Length: 266
Image 1 (cartoon, rainbow, N blue to C red):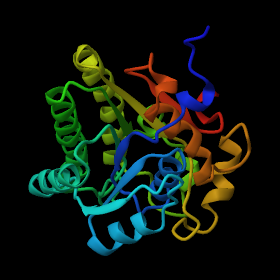
Image 2: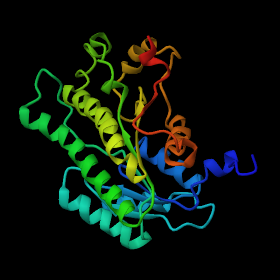
Image 3: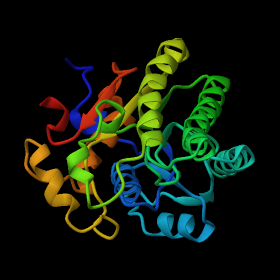
């Protein structure tokens, strides 16, 4: 009992450097704040240099950590490698990776082209490449790391056609394929990298619509599909991301944590 870590110690990230992609986005910004509030030094990544820098500048720093923004595009191999190297040169290492950012066309199964479908799936390749860079640098310095991939409830279940009908396009089929693949890639990487001390887990949000972007009427259609009867708000992912990033989840790898208000429990 004398060696048992306290809850405060288990969730403490004050000695960790965390890199998060899509850090300036609707959900990414909340997760970035969570990591910073837990004490991590946060590398905020965005495709846009100004957005990356602004995201870092807006983070709290309870232990005077020097947060830092870098340009990183999951769909561009050179950008991934350059962004990663910039982060390592600045902070010396990456202990936590949150693969959150993604970009893809909104076309649904009625009009998506093969090229657009392939572009969406390119995000999975970017997630893997960046995760492998983090794994390799952790192994080279003989240290552990936590890799977190962002999935979705739509990587587990199909969407309801009636929720979107006459309001907007259906949830993109390529997005569903992408998120399902990310969830399974989590399991695959976890079993191969466990011996290296690199844990790989997935965080799958349910419906967290951005009020600035959601079509009128869609939320009213979605709420009855959720047992809690409402949509998620970004801060409800903060506890989960700190749990997965920290030693609080030290015996957890290859798992998909679903935060969906009960959506997939029906």
